[in-house]
Image (cartoon, helix red, strand yellow):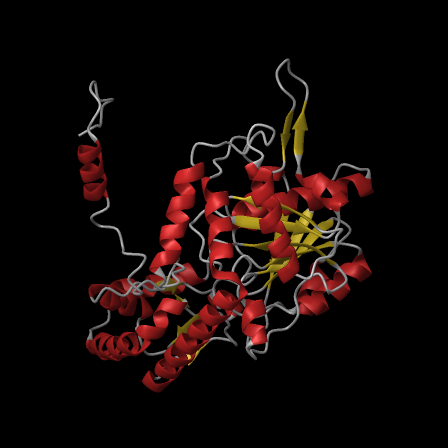
Length: 424
């Protein structure tokens, strides 16, 4: 039945009931049973603080900070926090966006415009990146007229193959990309090596720290072996990092940082070619609610460094328990994971495994792999602090489901996986 515009408004109670009905099939992001796109701290008071901030600022518009100066104050605070984590100096400038994809769009635009300005000729700029880089770069390229060249990764470590990146760079290369970590496997690309290439070839290096930017620095302080990936490295031009991932802010919060204020200028949009007000957009959108900005600000200040250190401890504990359980069951861990763990198997149908785990309420993310690059199908697990208290139960259920899948007869559809895995 098609929903029609109601002639008469509904009561608050009716509206909330309808919304509950719509969400009846949704997964519970607070349950600790999601290992996909939910970043849960397990702290109820944190959520309450975020909700209150959203209520305070939901109807305030970031479009004009002269009307709502709170926007620029909160944005500056968040940018300063991100700069400190990434060891940026006073020259580093940044923008708050509504997600990692938007941050990447701004970085790609800046790299493209700088490239075209320096070339002075009409050509198609290129992005060179490992095959493990996020698809948002392809999306940005389609929107802005660039070409993406994805290259192989080191088969053992599943990190960027530096030689392959170097070989793929041409006079048309506007940007190279490294991830800290990448999304499929949670492995960290060798940013120092990529930066040396960037300096030598005079190309823009963007560090995609959307996943790890707000957690790897704390893990490193706790003794984890995390290579440097920030502005301490000469050659890093921009970095993206998401508060809505491991800073545990509500979904819709990201930051992009530029090494120089001059670089940020390339990412912005301005227009005075109409009779209305001058338009100056630091981000992709014009009108933006302050709600998610305020919620991110609130969460960052609620936890503070001590809070993030404690959550990093819980995350590392959960990761250790889960990796131990996976290896005891017989699964192979892919690469050297950080906050994301991926595992594979030659004798277990991983897609069926995910289905069986879903029947018990556990949501995993199956990945098809790329067979012609020797990347097998795998299962992705996003590890968060809340998983520390459910890790043993999860691995116990995983063992039972693994045994159940092994007893299942082969399916005719299983051969399709080999076909999908060759699509690149």
